[in-house]
Image (cartoon, rainbow, N blue to C red):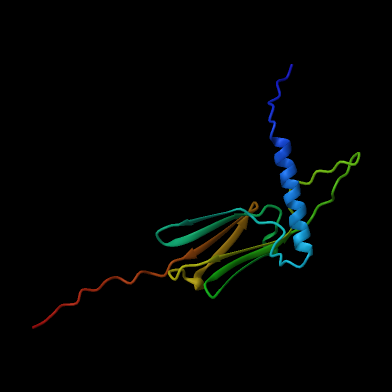
Length: 144
């Protein structure tokens, strides 16, 4: 006999999510501005010499990713193409998101926009934004 964990609120939670999606879809159709169909998860870390952004974008080729920096804003955008949807007995389940994505990040003044590097491997995009070299303090001697 298999034990199944009873979660009484899971059906209500699923219903709430479906209602949210339905209302969101109707709001988007009524003229709201939609910036992306899905949003990739990102990690942002700061090291001594750089800022590093790591984004999960499985199924997106490197040639389909656009990364650019303008006026202190780093923009990442691209698109993941939809695969064939499968239907059986009237039921369908599509959990992976498809379509365009768009993320923007404000960069601090210490970021060196001229030396940004981006690479994509195995569905993970890594963007390295070096910091400007620190200006070393200079001792100024005072004479009489």
